[in-house]
Image (cartoon, rainbow over all chains, first blue to last red; front, side, top):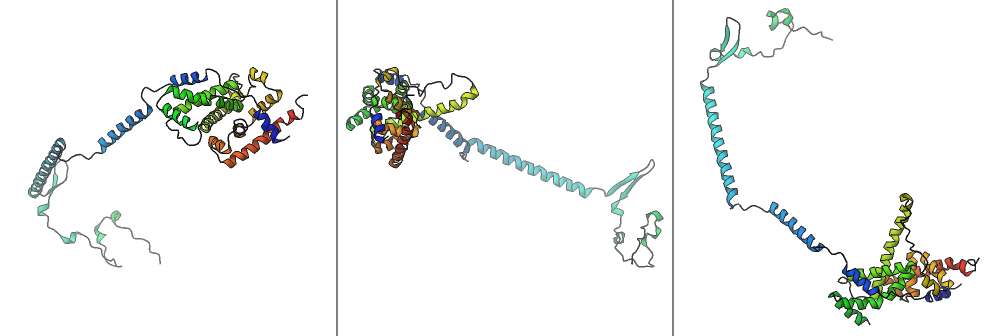
Length: 159
Length: 191
C-alpha cells in the first residue's frame, strides 16, 4: 500500500459545506455576545487610578507652611518649654530642701526611747573604715573582743 | 482576492456587519470541511466553525495582515479543537470517579452524518474513522495538506511550527493512518 493511495482516498473524501444559515447564526452569536456594562479595560484603569491616588495621598510630603500642622508644632514646643521650666523649678526646690535639711537619721525606737543620730555632730573618723591588715601569727586579732560565736573560725591549713 | 480580504477586514474592523458576513461566506465551507475531517463529526464541526468566526471577530483589531487569512482561521479552529479534546480527556479521566454516565457522552468521534454515509463509499467511511482516531498532532497537518491543499508554509503558519516539523508530522501521520487502515485494506474488516 502506498502513500498515493492514502492521499488519493483523503482527497476523494466528500467536501462538507456549511449549512445555509451558517453566516446568520454566526452574526446572531455575535449579537448575543455577553457584554460587560463597563468595559474591563476602563474598570481596571479606574481601579488603578484610585490606588495611585490613595498611595500618593499617604506618601505626599506635607507642606511646612500649611496652617494646622504649624499650630500643632508650636503648641507642642510651648508645652515642652513649660514642662522644662516646671522641672527646673522642682529641681531647685529639692536642692533647697536638701541644703536646709537637718542631718538626722532615725535609727529606731522602743516604748520609751526614740534613737536618732545627728550626723552633724558625727566627727569623721578615718579609722572607722577597717583597712586590710596582714595577719601574722601571734598578732592579737581585731575580733578578740567579739563573742566567740561571731569570731571568724580559723581555717585548716594544708601544707 | 487578498486585496478584497484586506478591504473586507478594514470594513469589518469598523463594525460593518455586511463586510464580515462576506468574509464568513468566503471561508465557511473550508472551515466546516476541515473541522469535519478533524473531528469526524459534522455537527460539531459546524459549531466549532461558527465559534472560530466569533473568536476571529473578537480579535479583529489584533489581527495583522501577515500571511493568509485562511491560515489564521485554521489556527483558531485547530486551537478550539485542541481545547475541546483536552476538556474531553479530562472528563474521561473524571468519569469513573463521578460515576454518572451522562458526562462525556458527546459522541465526538461519532460516524459521519447519515447523509454523508449515504454518499460516501465504504472506503471513505473507514478513512474518515481512521483519521478521526489519529492524534490531533498528526491529524491537523494531514487534513490541512491532503484535504485542504495548503502549502507547508501555510500549514506551519496555521499550526505555529516550523516547516520541518510539519513535514515530519505529515510523514508520521501517514504512517499511522496506513497502520490503522491496514486491516481494512487487507480485507480483514470484511470478515
